[in-house]
Image (cartoon, rainbow, N blue to C red; front, side):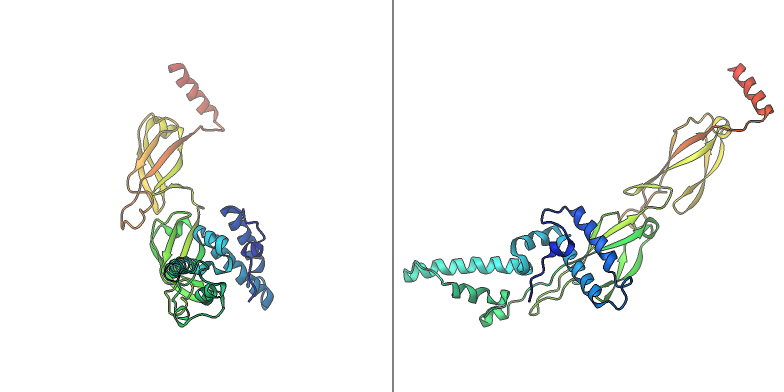
Length: 297
C-alpha cells in the first residue's frame, strides 16, 4: 500500500502553521467537493484524501505523532510500549545468556510485524489498537447557538445526531466519544472532535456571554429624557433615558446578554452605548429656537 504524504496532499510544507493548514484545506475542499464535481470519481477520491490529511494535521497531537512515525502514527503508543518491552527483554536476555549481541533484526521485526504488515506472533496479531480520531469543522451563525438545538452531521458517510449546547464560542472544540475511526482487532473507536466556526451577522458584538451594542439617541430625548425602544438579541425592551444624557453614555441590561455555556437559563449582560444624533436640515423655526437657547446659555 502506497504511503500518503499528508503535507503533499494539502500542498503545504512541514513547517506550515495551523492557519496555513486550515486555509489550504478549505481551498482544496471547495475545489474537489462532490457537489461541485458530480459523478467525478477522481474528485471524490481526492476529496477523501484531503479530509484524511486535514483530520491528522489539524490536530496538534496527531500531527506530532505523524511527523515522528509517518504512516504508522496511529500505532505510536503501542510502538513505544513494544519498544520498551523489547529493550527490557533484551537486557534480561543479555544478563542471563551473556550474549552482548542482543536481539537480531529478525527478532525486532517479529515484535513489531503486526504494526507494519510483516509476520507477527499470535500475541501481536491479537493486539487491540484504538481507532483514529476524526476532526471536523461546523460553521454556524451566532443566532444558531443562542439556544440549545440538535443537528445531524455526516461524517465518513455516517449520520450522527448531536446536541449543540447554547453559548458555544467561536473556535471552541467539543468531543463526541466513540465516533472516530474504527478500532483495530476489537480495539476502541477513536473520537470525533468538532470545532465551531461561528459567524456573527448580528448588530451585537459578543465577548463570551456579554453582548455590546450602539444605539442612536436623538438630541431632544438626550436633553429632556424619555422612553426608548431598543433591540436585544431576542426581542425589544423599553428603556427610560435620563435627562441630560451625554454622548457615549453606557447602560447595562442585566441578563439580556448571551447564554452561559452549559449553565441552563443563566445569561450574561447587554451593554448599550448611546450615540447622540445631531439633527440636520433644520427649519427656520428650529434655527430660531436653537439661537434662543444659545443666548440663554
